[in-house]
Amino acid sequence: MSEAVVDDIVAVLPPLLQSLEALGFIARRLNPPDFGRVMEAAGQPDLALKAVRSRLAHWPEQFTNVQTSLETASDAALAAFAGLRSVQRGEGDLIAVFRALRHAPRAQEALYPLAAKLPPVSSFFVDPACREDAGLLARLAEPAEEGTGIMHDHNEPGSRGGFSLYVPEYYTPDRAWPLVMALHGGSGNGRGFLWSWLRDARSFGAIVVTPTATGSTPDKTTWALMGEDTDTPNLARILDSVRSRWNIDPARLLLTGMSDGGTFCYVTGLEGASPFTHLAPIAATFHPLMAEMADAQRLRVLPVYLVHGRLDWMFPVQVARQTKDALAAAGADVTYRELDDLSHCYPREINAPILQWLAKDR
Image 1 (cartoon, rainbow, N blue to C red):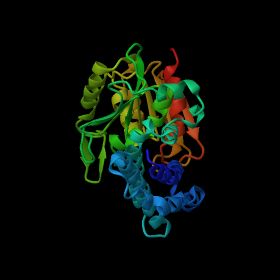
Image 2 (cartoon, rainbow, N blue to C red):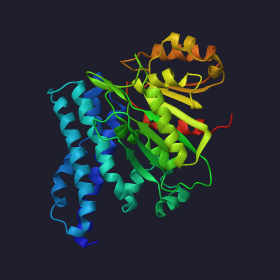
Image 3 (cartoon, rainbow, N blue to C red):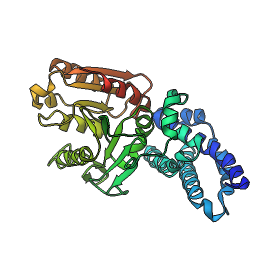
Image 4 (cartoon, helix red, strand yellow):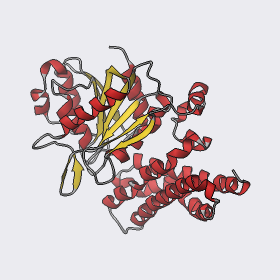
């Protein structure tokens, strides 16, 4: 790699990674009354990125792939901040904030191919607690195994019913791997939601599948919470497809999800025929009738990891507390985590404890 290109990478990469970390900080702490304070706390790494963005132009042709990844990731991060700054100036609402944050997973998707080439990028996609783990770093330094990494099956933006998949690059078929099927929230999609889990799956060794719901309402893509359930058979189809190709641990099949996706965890996961061994609804709602209609035998000792924020403005925390009691009364093995500083957001820091819980023998 030429010295000039290296200099450009050294100039661009730190503010790009800092901008992505800041976007993660904002997404995790997004609470409408606190938006201004959260933006101030996140700082202005985008200004530094904007100042060096021009250094990605006019590279030699042989570095086009690296150039394109950095350009696309930088532009997506800057677009996210542009939308957020607009709201900060009073020119938008909460919906505009969510739209702006959709650029963050696009930036990560563009950047991830460089993880195999640039150590700082690889480190970004590792849980901070594991960044000095010599064994993990050695595994990640090896060439990727065939049939690993990120894959998409009919899961382009705007599509319905497809899925995205991440298989750790150090996967080998000589042991069974835990599987996480993670369901996006309303208005989301599986391709974007993959990035809520990839860092942890890569760090701790799990296969992650993120489907996109099959249906939609006039204003969002969401799961079959009412009417005909076309999602449960589609999830079964996706699970069968993944299990036919990779060695999946039949005792560690986790169904999790955020908001509407968490609620659908209950809808489909409490059915007697559900193949999932563990459920982890995040920021979800629950009606007591769900427990009454659930398969009683399945509910007994079913491991459920329930996570909710005390500041949740969409589904009040009292609902989660009642859900915990209802499921426990029905015999489920409930682990309950209530996060004092969490609003209606995805708490990515909960992924590692969930994977540890999934790994327990029962």
